[in-house]
Amino acid sequence: MTPRLAEDLARVHRRLLRQARSMSSPLYTGLLERCAEDVAAHGPAATVLRGHGADPPDSALGLRLMAAVHRLVLDGRAPQLVPYYPSVGGRADPAAAWPALVALLEERAEDLRELVSRALQTNEVGRSQALLCGFLVVSARTGLPLRLLEVGASAGLNLRWDHFHYKARGRRRGEPLFSGEAVLVRWSA
Image 1 (cartoon, rainbow, N blue to C red):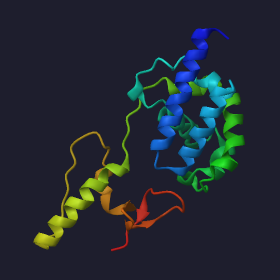
Image 2: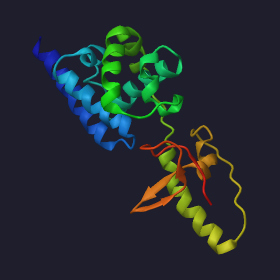
Image 3: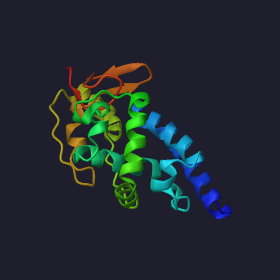
Image 4: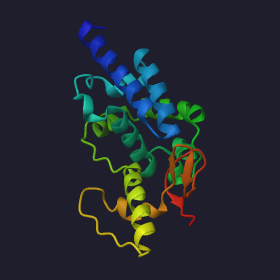
């Protein structure tokens, strides 16, 4: 391995670890930590992510990898991961999902390399937490119903703020739809 390739993979490894620590999804956190270890060991994750060490630091490399994998899960091209993805009815279990992800990284390396190279538009429902605080204040002061009009790149996610599960400082609002994941929820008034 050339020194240049070794440094590229070392940068990829550090980025994956840093991003794993910032994830709110236990599934993505666990899988990214294992992918970082795999990159350091020059495994199949290193093959998929080789050449991305020079990507801009804010390019969300780990999230792009997880989005690429999720796309294959949603498209039916990664059936071995379906049991672990709550978005398709599975149960988030990073330890159990890891062998299936390794197999996918090996079998679909070229598909994943192409998908990871694409830019990513993040539409994170966590951004709605700021809205919740403001809406609760407005509701308490006025007693009036709220109507929203969203203009922006959040694809309407903020319009469904009342369908999410929120956790902050030991307090919760909304009931989780999936155990172990703070994602879309059934709202409990």
